[in-house]
Amino acid sequence: MKVGKKGKIFALAGMILLLVVTGYLNVFLNNNTSSQSAPASTVTVSNFFETYRSDRIAMREQTVMYLDSVINSELSSAETIAQAQENKMQLVNSIETELKLESVIKALGFEDVVVSNSDENYNIILKSTTLNDDEVAKVLEVVTTHTGAQPSNVIIIPVE
Image (cartoon, rainbow, N blue to C red; front, top):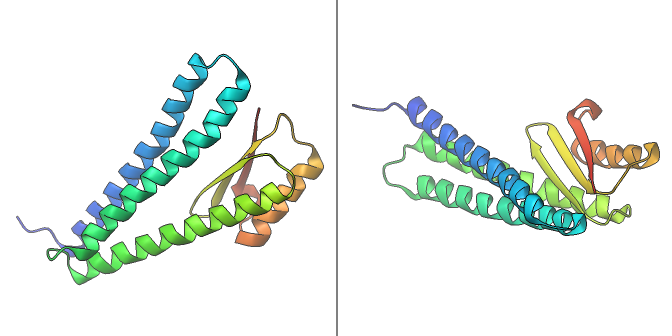
């Protein structure tokens, strides 16, 4: 049974999507477990940010390894290789954007922040008990200025 080029691309995209979903679920399931066993909320928050970052790094390393194996495989067609290279560049651009946003938002005075994005949607998770309108406006301005995203595509979440 021969699989066409489009089939290979769909399979590749499906595997990458599954990998991302698995990593996302891993972050939240691990966070729920650690928050149930942790006695103090400050430990839970610290663990959330640390766990999120380490899981994000691990997930991205796996994705890059998978994409590299597709790119370097003798069985991959030119179209599949090009798609894998494009996906790898999108991942690199996403990483750069998230790191830049995290640095700039921390410079606004927040103790910790993680940013995740997919397509044109951005989730900004801030270590803060509450946010006033001015803080939300500043974070929103940073995200929209650096990414060109619409304000309706930005979600800002304070975490104690």
